[in-house]
Length: 230
Ligand SMILES: N[C@@H](CCC(=O)N[C@@H](CS)C(=O)NCC(=O)O)C(=O)O
Image 1 (cartoon, protein in one colour):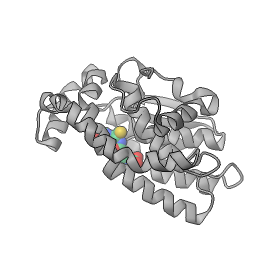
Image 2 (tube, helix red, strand yellow):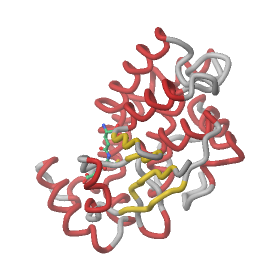
Image 3 (cartoon, helix red, strand yellow):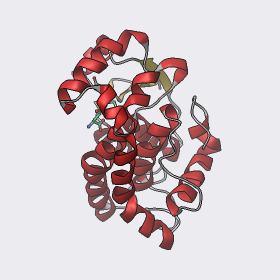
Image 4 (tube, protein in one colour):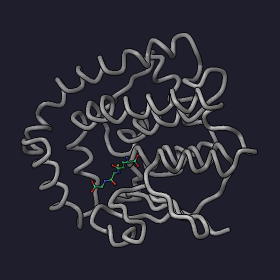
């Protein structure tokens, strides 16, 4: 069956969307192959058929699913015989908490730290849109946000603390093996890795070590697109 994932993409094949990485990893976990359709911010006409203005969008045969959480649930429910993403109903509910925490706490802390780097790596066609949209959202210029990078990085360190503590005790957020929990958090960290030379995690940190294990999954899937090596 034909299957396509519409993904946000920057210059030089930088696949920097944290949400799209969740879906990439979830598909790989299920062992499901997919074609990728690279789109930039201002190519929303490519996903207009889905009714969504955001990536990722998954098309599988006649099914159209937009939103990374809905895609994860769709994959889990459509392919119950393939490796489980959630490990049951309780796991699904807790994953939804982690999904919401990551969207509302971790992502903003990362974005404020690397927004200038994102801006440097988007396609030329997106520059005007990105500046206008993000400056309106943050009520600050991108240059002002860039100049705050060090203090924002300190805030991010605090946000990472619960992740760091959990990963000192266990190898994966899912427990003994990677699960959708891991893909949620990994997407957040693959985002800076795709566009920013700023090391948001450093060696000798349980989060860094876990991230290295994540990079190694599925034949180093996370190394298959352009990224910074740190
Ligand atoms: N809740 C959605 C959020 C998706 C989302 O915000 N995607 C971003 C890419 S990281 C996007 O498409 N942004 C388009 C824009 O800002 O114009 C999900 O989980 O898929």
